[in-house]
Length: 230
Image 1 (tube, rainbow, N blue to C red):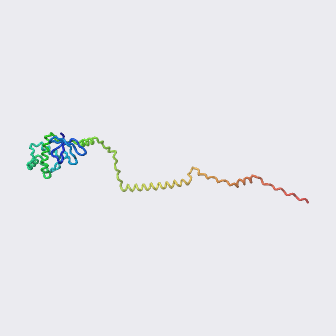
Image 2: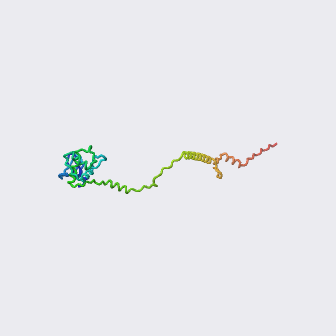
Image 3: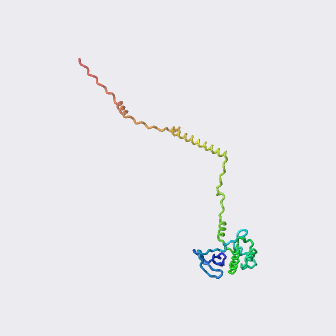
């Protein structure tokens, strides 16, 4: 029987094996009388043993570590009727327990639970988390980073270099302006070696035609007047 399937149910004594979960509860089997029943989650709360931690004078430890220490110990587990004897037992088995925060009722519960687990041959071992294995595989499958592909930040320029850049930009601007002016002048004046654009001839006046016709004709001779007879 797996330790990860063992749960405790509030309001119900003993320990139970979780058989299946449902939306409104779970089907469990008692480790004491082996009876199977449905337990409503609206009435009861479920706690996995492997999720329970115990207060210590240092960091908290998982309950399974206390169970393992109790199982390895040669001392007999007390019945829990005498609180002083029970506390002395745990002081010997696991002295790091913070007895100011771990009450006598908790000690009694741990003693009883371990006896039930041993009777049902439950291995005191946490379930291996597959998430950690997947994480290790993911780390092993990571591709190396190409350092050359990482862009390096540009070096900062000094104040003198910045002033030189400004002067150079001003000179470039002045050069561009003078060039644009020269270009505009060149458009107005003809370039050497090229013919100047010819002007269209003005239309001739109609009078010229009449004048030509007059010039081409010979002058009309007038007839002499007849002489009078005496």
